Length: 352
Image 1 (cartoon, rainbow, N blue to C red):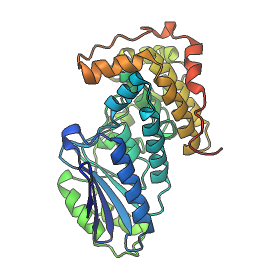
Image 2: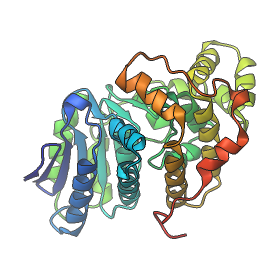
Image 3: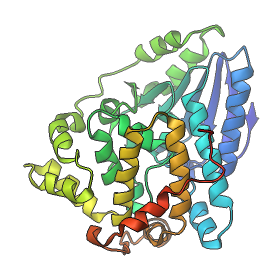
Image 4: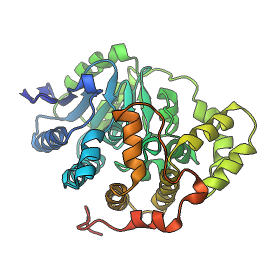
């Protein structure tokens, strides 16, 4: 067993086990954690005795609540290269997970947000539980859905990803499966059984063997609220401006549309417009790599966005939950201000 304070790496039977070990911080990602995970994945891929990889979070509250937002905030304030280094290595890890040569089983138990979605939803076998609370909440901190989310969200059924990206609201296991961010739901009490079952598979086990092990413990996740409101979501959020989306929501009856509109109105106007542009660009993109390259450029632009610093202040530092966005309205967001987020990062993460 190879361990650090923040990530525990084990070989358990034929499974490589990665345990995120910052439960007091909801297993949020630091740069050393990203590097430890990347190294472990390389080692497990090269080890013929390892048939699959399992990643989980320690503690009962979270799989992973996201990236180390304080580090990014501090780096931007200091104008250091820490934020860019973090994003570059995190995004390369997301891409590696999406293209991993062995079954990659993510146990998305508890809070799974932001960077936690990047660690899980790109994997080949995604497991949720009754405790899963999954979200891309970035528009609420003056940011945008990254870690390849502009690829994931833009390829969800209908406008489900637009709903997730703009509102930032959390969804449950049934919603995650409907949104194609997860494959199976099992009881949280069966997670250790699942780990041992996968670990007991032979080293020559196939992805179908891992699938059967998970399916053998799978439960009906119940009704998805997103599925139940799919028609309204597709009608109201199909527009290409946030203003038109809000008008579309105003035309929809019922509490769901009203709650959606209310959530959107509390988010950073700049982030909303940026997020929608990125999601539409993601839908037209040829690959995850293309989206990650675009996201990195937008990330570097975020470091010059006052809403990012105000959003982190309100949510993480002062915790008053009362951000003062600048500009405060959608109408006052200048189109040229959005264009600066589309300056490509140099060098790109991935060659065209």
